[in-house]
Length: 431
Ligand code: AMP
Ligand code: GLY
Image (tube, rainbow, N blue to C red; front, side, top):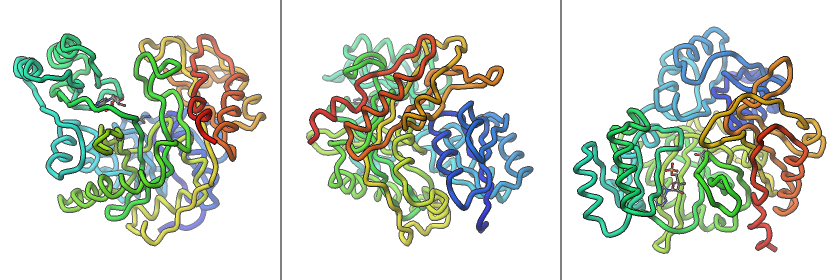
């Protein structure tokens, strides 16, 4: 194992990957962080260097890791994990953090995940899977409640339709199976029992056998204030969440994470990496909505700044199977991140526009993680749906929320969208 002065490759170019690169670059064990492809934020980060290789270019990434003799690869997004990047890197003797393709299939196929959960008695909603549109529509007619309709494959977070009426559900089924709105990701469709209750993401570092649950960050998925409007990748997140207390983390660890790791080990595909359990807290107890095989975005922009232990030590423990013997410490603070998105998000993309006020937000005490940004003539411009995640830490949640929102207020770009209520509704009900 390499000791000091590691060179690490972070794969991806979103806010999550900026947070990963930012955290790794602060480690005394790290000499340089390469980010492929990165963004304007990682380009400006000390000890970081962007490399123009896309996260979808598995051949290019393996070649890059080998050519640059990197000591470790940390994979951000789900697609390369599901496509087998970590397996490919292992074949080339490159150490990598993230699950194998076989383990990442839990995110790659919702049909597979559901079958896995039901087979192992892990709490989740009932569901049926179809490839034939008539069979799916017949099943829909037989149900007494309107189900959630899901494209089985990876659809960049857009393949889930929470229909209010049976007609809406039927339209969604046709769009997925017949019109192939999500391409091959919609070759299979799930009709899933709709669950009700507060939603919370529980993320754990996993080493194949043992796990360590991270501080819970609650995500705001809807575009609009008061949690209305279309679903997005996430408009902001905060910690601590009043609904995800220690008792809940322990319960989800015991009822969901532990049996999942045990089952995957028994099936010969041990899970190493971050396991993200999207949970619905129903009146019958916490149930799994989905598994993701990676860090959350924007949850990572809240959680990693709270990590006191060197992230390289944690990643090493996950890869080497020594998590049980590794102490992982977290700052006892509140953290809030507010996402700034470009005009038209999440429906339409927009032309790049210049971003100003980044330094002012940083000098006000915020850490501004970039997502869809690029440098044009040396000036940061928007280059994607979610553009920035503005993070602030404080002893109290209300103060962290105020600081993050104040940071957002200092940043400007044409058509910017953000929510002013991230963490605020919650701050009001907390002492
Ligand atoms: P997913 O992409 O699986 O995270 O789903 C996106 C969102 O759809 C989730 O965050 C939930 O808000 C909602 N959702 C997914 N599955 C269900 C379900 N079975 N019942 C209710 N809401 C759901
Ligand atoms: N914030 C939701 C996700 O990362 O999937």
